[in-house]
Amino acid sequence: MRQPVLWCIMLNNLLATFFENFSEIILSGKYLKMILNGLWLTVEVSVGASIIGLILGSVVAAVKLLPNNNKWMKIPKFICGIYTTVIRGTPMALQLFIMAFVVFAIRGFPQEIVAILAFGINSGAYVSENIRAGILSVDKGQTEAGRALGLSGARTLVGIVVPQGIKNVIPAIGNELIALIKETSIVGMIGMFDLTQASKVIGSGQYLASYFAPTVVVAIFYLAIVYLLTLVIKLIERRLRAGDKR
Amino acid sequence: MINVDHVYKYFGKNQVLKGADLKIEKGERVAIVGPSGSGKSTLLRCMNLLEEVTYGEVWLDDKLLTPVDPYLHYDIIEKSNTFKKLYAARADKVGEEGARAEIIRQIKQNDLLKRAEGREFSAAVKTFYKANILDINVARQRMGMVFQQFNLFNNMKVIDNLIYAPTKLKVMNKAEATEKAYSLLKRIDLTDKANVYPNSLSGGQKQRVAIIRSLMMSPEVMLFDEPTSALDPEMVGEVLALIKEVADDGMTMAIVTHEMKFAREVATKVVFINDGVVAEQNTPDKFFDDPQNPRLKDFLSKVL
Ligand SMILES: Nc1ncnc2c1ncn2[C@@H]1O[C@H](COP(=O)(O)OP(=O)(O)OP(=O)(O)O)[C@@H](O)[C@H]1O
Ligand SMILES: [Mg+2]
Image (cartoon, rainbow over all chains, first blue to last red; front, side):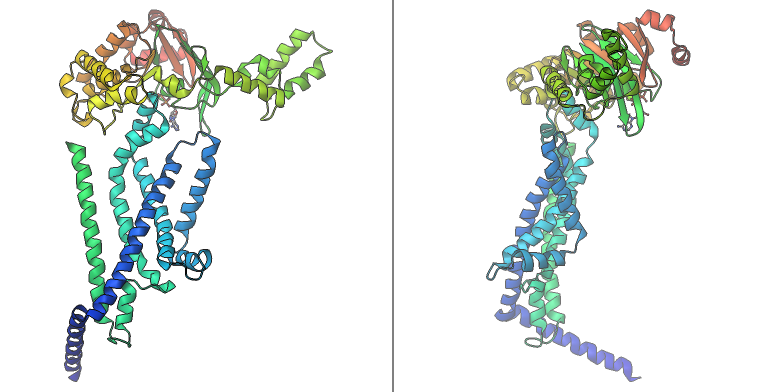
């Protein structure tokens, strides 16, 4: 008989604490500042890593896509093959550890750069595969027609195939960037203070002693970022598709 | 103009061309016919190296497009260690010239050349290659190609499809190319389509644009791979008419086709491909009225 009543009281308490904490986080400058600090780091790492990932991914995709017609292409192609295999075959957390504690095990080396590089290199591998798949989905006849006119392989790729493949690539890259943002939440493992860490610290006994409100607040921030990015991608996609019909 | 010399083409283990020989002289119009899967498209695509040949050579006039096939050059075979060894062993037995010829035949028949045949051999191959090779992109500018699936560039308007290659390859400047493009569009009566994208054209229109896109480069020879096979029947006529027009202008051409009537009408030579080799070639009249090869007789009885 008393069970439901107890639960009601517990729930009531929980919600009361939640709303209390929630408004405290938003209103008290202290917690908001922590969250904004975390947000800044998440954004910093995500944006930096995206840029590196897009550039690296494009270069690697280009190397893999260019015709294998001379021995000088073999070595870069081989290296790029190893790169994507290793990066996609090992956990992100491990790659971050290696970057922080092996490659850049230098006292005082800025951690942001470590994280940006680790995530950038990781996302480059996925971006390159996305680009490659998108480009390869363009009908082979387009390449053949270009080559048959005497255009070089590179010119055909850049002028004819890539403009058509990019439409297939954008959504996949969008998903990759969204995954990247969410994955940066592991930087706490190397002692960095990002959005997720902010919720952890605020929820700890030292401050609010409850994770409920801080995690919800942080979740809302992540959702907002991802939602914004989704909108931007949809916009770009629509632009490209509009160019399709005309 | 084009010389396909003993070309073999393997797709993995699948041997598609098995020593195909075909010469196309300047001004000739060669129709290539044969059963499905016999290697017609592959042969045509080997001519401009859209397919790399496995063995054999392809020549454009006096220029080599493929790697050197040493088996086709006696003087190169004679530089090989294998030849030298065999020759040293037999020199006392046979008269000198006879021995050379016999050893070469023996080497060719039994495929005796190895990967490494000594420095003199490599040098001979390299010298021959350097002296004769023509860059494939340059060669392709001289050879137009028209595909079954049209393959117009989907990301470009019709006019840009026409001027893209000639301007990028600096054959013409943009003004010249545009002028030429419009005069060709006028010829096929599609001037009003200059600024639309290919996907709004009918099949017949697409193929006619594809043909004039090739003509933009002023090729010396044109290769057609079943140019009307992907078209609705009512559009076949307009495309064949354009090809005929181009032929009447004196264009050298090779056409893979299933249109026997058209082959007979337009071609100066008809070639029968069967099982990866040129099984018969003749003037259209003799080819169709007096076929020799039993396979060709069989083929013609089915398609005519
Ligand atoms: N890119 C490729 N990879 C593997 N096999 C191929 C390839 N292209 C062609 N082939 C094979 O080579 C053979 C000959 O093909 P090809 O296209 O030259 O025939 P075809 O005479 O043009 O036939 P069709 O009249 O049907 O066009 C076929 O068995 C085909 O399966
Ligand atoms: Mg074919």
